[in-house]
Length: 252
Image (cartoon, rainbow, N blue to C red; front, side):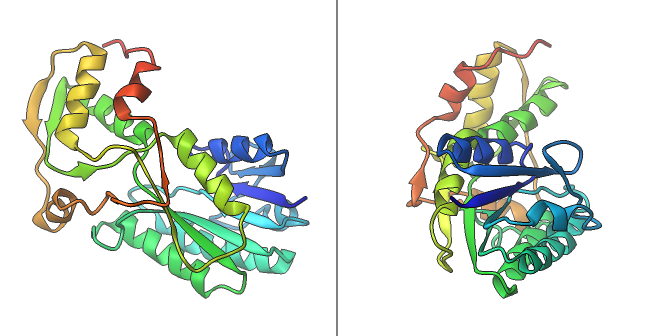
């Protein structure tokens, strides 16, 4: 039986990956900076060697700061791959994002660099790219809702429930390493405006519809569907509306 290490295993995606692996009766180690079974810090590499001893498969679901992602996603990825090589790990799986090569933000550039580090590393690898999560879309809409704003934008998204993405990542981790990226996506392609309306209706709140201005270099690819994927290998079944229906409205 293989031993799996989930880096960032207490996060939005990582905890679902760990749960899905446990459902398969796999041995799972949860690696995280502040909590989890193994305390590790990708920024300085502390705890990595001990956490990866005896591990067969490393799944990297780590997440860097939006404003300064490089210490975790770039430098941390390099430390992780090196530690995996020292430990004799046979497979490193990097979780990434659909469309990052088309949207020139600092965070997405860091994700591209992370992918390249994994590809060029000494350990056999796989890359799984996912569309955005329902959880992250809802969090952004909730943040704007504090000011009673409902964004209007033709940016195209195809969100997926993190639990479904976690199951897909766990399945990919059980396969042999492969240079062909696995892509996972949600069941529906919708604009941000459509998602915002669904969220506002679920919250039963009257919000001010306000255009969300974006620089053309970012707005154009988003409107063209850069963050969606029409024919993914794994397609989730839970729509954003269905996902919201299982959660209590937020007071405010």
